[in-house]
Length: 113
Length: 116
Image 1 (cartoon, chains in turn cyan, brown):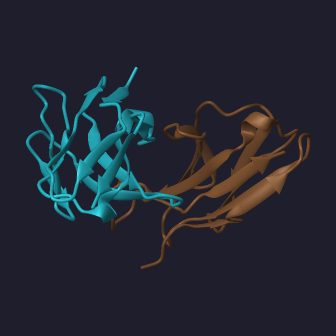
Image 2 (spheres, rainbow over the protein chains, first blue to last red):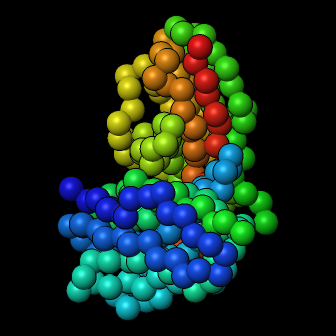
């Protein structure tokens, strides 16, 4: 079935460090790919998305590129802040699945001052 | 911009009681999804509705039921609650019509259900 695998956490970084969270997917069709972020005690917020190969999604300094050849959608940020501390979920949707979201397990990121 | 509204935000129930969670999608969104997120887990799809008809069903227990009404709001009804039902329940909406891309869901803040 369709699934998402993302690197396990927790990840602890210092402010201004470089962040990478790996995400790979398995899908029977051509999925749309997403990163959602969940801040402590809050709901899910869409961070960025990409809908076709080589698309780059970006938002708030975060970037991810849809790589069809490696079935990956790694999240990166060049200089993290304490306010980036959250749980990050990689997810996919497919038209064939009525666009319901399949999430990865989530990666907890803690940024220390 | 208007967002997805969920109520209540917090709910405490005893075992074997019933609970009703409500979701009000973004205006003009015609599709609603329900997800359950257990502690430390990723959200799991429960059920979805399009134009007031159930469109897909995931790992939703038989004790749960849901519907979408004529104004597009949705309710998740949970009966014979068990301790394991304690979780964060999210509603998300999207639209097949114009506006945001059809493949993007927008989430509400969630309802935190605690079963004692």
